[in-house]
Image (cartoon, rainbow, N blue to C red; front, side, top):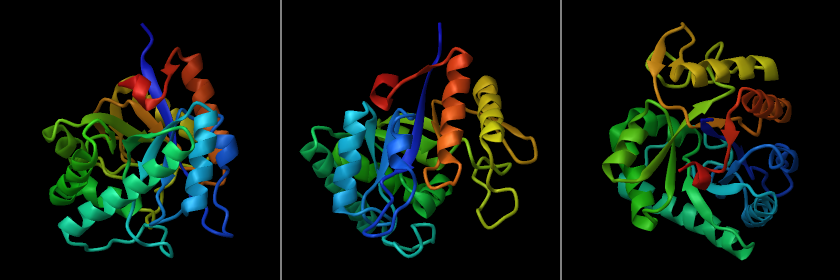
Length: 256
């Protein structure tokens, strides 16, 4: 029987007069969209437009909350009290869900963005705060969490439905975290290289680090970052490659 997988992308990251990514094209390739909620990127109009287009394309909608850091695109560490962080997450997810519902859709999953995600992957207290925010708001929401992370464990402890994510365009350290963007080799460039990276991880059910170490995981969803210059070509190549290999690509609600 063919295995189901999900292809997702981080979208809706334009802001005001600033355009980011190729959302229209990506939404015709991926199965799920993680939409910025206005803190690291996005604004109310972009949120409504993106959720509307996602709904029209049959793409499931996820909230992509981050730190309140427009200038740093949410990629800078912020030390925020955990109770305040929970409130920020609830606020962002709720805002995006309101936009989605106004366009005939709804938020079905949550995926933390950038520095918040990276910290939650390694810091159990932050991971617990993220999971608590999701569970308090709506325990039926799926938590899209990087494989082999503390976020996966935190979500499971609160009985959230977890979908494990791997990254098509990012390299991994030997402990299963992403290689920091400031270090050489952090990014995987080009559609073919990204496809090979994904196929190895999917077929071996393992994260493969930059040094060749294999960490057993259950890859269910593959992310192509929408802000990369070759995002559309990469997403299309991965979609085509997975379908050719016999995988069935679905939205996150269909996956679980």
